[in-house]
Length: 607
Image 1 (cartoon, rainbow, N blue to C red):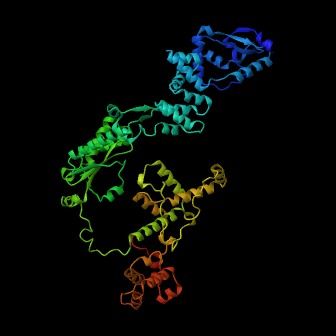
Image 2: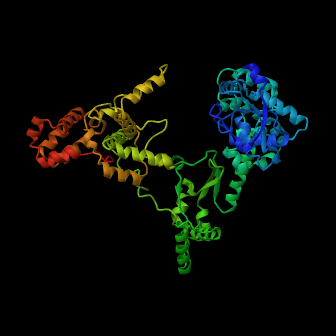
Image 3: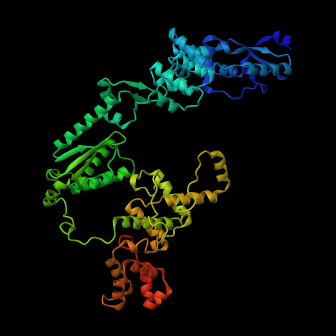
């Protein structure tokens, strides 16, 4: 067979008589690779002949050289390739051996070797197009390999040895400190570190170009101050290495914005380092807020506004129209008057997109009187009367417990509608609802269990039993397979249980709509007892409640007898009443109307 192969004739065969033989084992080709090979053949000629077997019709099926044949098809505009030299096999058996042998012995160059070879040629001044032609690849492939050519030799050695991946090697391009790169290399070799982890180790203190500080300061300003940068050659990511300088520039620009705000007439202005201002920030600082004086459009402006808004809704408004609409909207939105600014201030911050934001019209406690006198704030309905008003019988801790109970009732109710929960989840995931999201899907729980534990409180067991399984040290894959085998209904039930336990309502209008649909009933899950309520309020509160529930006048014997009891006895008596104790209700002659009132009663603030 070997002798026949050596002496097999080479014939010039018209390209039209050639086709890829079914014996050819190569069936998957890269179009880009074929194009690169065609350019290589156009410039350097066909260095290696094709091999084939002539069929009964006189055509030749190519058994070795399928990629070259496809490349030659792209060169049929060149008369040099109208006829192709083909080594012809004497029989099918020989042709099959040729096909298998070429495919078996074909060896692709290792990426590390490619990188070194391309780098050597580029260093000699060989242009990228010529490198691409010589190796039968496209120029993009060469450029990507050349980005790695400047890596320290030990990194390429590790790539060749298989102790890091090609993408791992690419991660090392973010660092120009050779000693540090080699130290990190020794740490990661053979341990399967991700590209992201390697970049973090190489640039532990650097700030990414997507950081809000960078976006706010600007790359030009940073570089103008001598700031150093490193680029990730395989992405558009930039690393800003002088973090102290970046922070200084960030603070300086934010301070300038504060001074600019003061120059606008605000009585005070300050900046915070956070990326947003939460409602709690204003609450904690006891800041009131006044709002812009709304503007009024003329009849002509109003008509134009409606016209532009209609075009905008139809997504056919051009840039000039958008600018005109924005100007009219600004009139409607209004502005702060000089008088308002004289009693208010502004807090500035930079959001996650690097944009300067302002919380305007904020009134400090010391400026509140002036804002009220100027008519910008209403005096509090409780002003002046706060000290004279009787202290509420319900403590703050009790209010918290009652709030948790009400929350549990809502979760209990919405659990009846799993489809609604799933719809809500999809809505929240696809909308940036921030702090008004319906579910507490974060690291914190949504409290629904009072400090008095289960006293008078009974939630759906799915909200209280079966906590998340502790998976420490366990086979997650095995556990997940077992979980999936339980079926779709089990999965849906687990999801509904989890979502219900994390439901917290969302915005005020959203919570109201959901309450209307689910009809939560606090008394369905909670009954006041001595432990969970009655022993935690004053005796006078219990006297009033007893009389109110039983429709008793203050001088009624049943009322006066109750009033003379010790507080603990009063609490126990009320617990028995709410429990529906037959003997007690009979002795008190509780009517159906009173029983209904007792069954529906809730403390203030829970309705």
